[in-house]
Length: 116
Length: 112
Figure: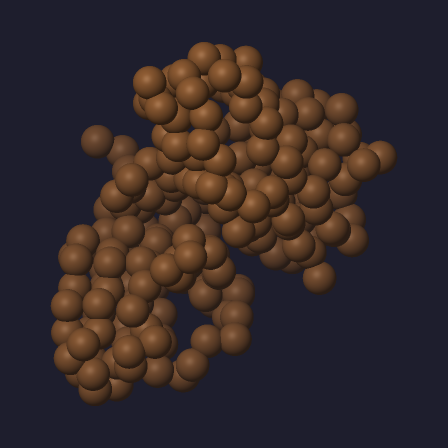
């Protein structure tokens, strides 16, 4: 079945440092890929997405590129802020032609803490 | 506000009790979901409904029963609660062919 693997955390950075959170996936078809963010005590929010190979999703300074050849969707940000401290989830969804109606399979989450 | 709203936000109850969590979305989405997040933050799908029809039913004990009276509501009823049911339960919704979810803020269930 489909699966998503993220780099283990927690990740601790100083403000303005460069962030990379690795994500690789296994899927039988051509999934869409997502990054979600969960701030303390809140639900998940969609951060960015990419629906086909070589697409780049971006939002709030975060970027991720859909790499089919390496089955990866690594999250990057050039300069993190304290307010970026949260849990980040990589996820995939089977394509619209399937019968899953958009079921999301999540990675295990990576806790990011940014210090001033 | 357009959103996915869950109630209650916190639920503390004793083993063996029966409890319900309610979810409503006013986004006009066709599909709704229940996810369970354990203490290690791992998220696993439990159920999914599309236009009131159950379409995903993962390996979940029979004590958990979802109910969707209409496509804007998806409730979760849990019978005979056990300690292992303690978790945060998230409701979410999406359009059928737009696979970004909108999540509720979660219900933290603690069974004592």
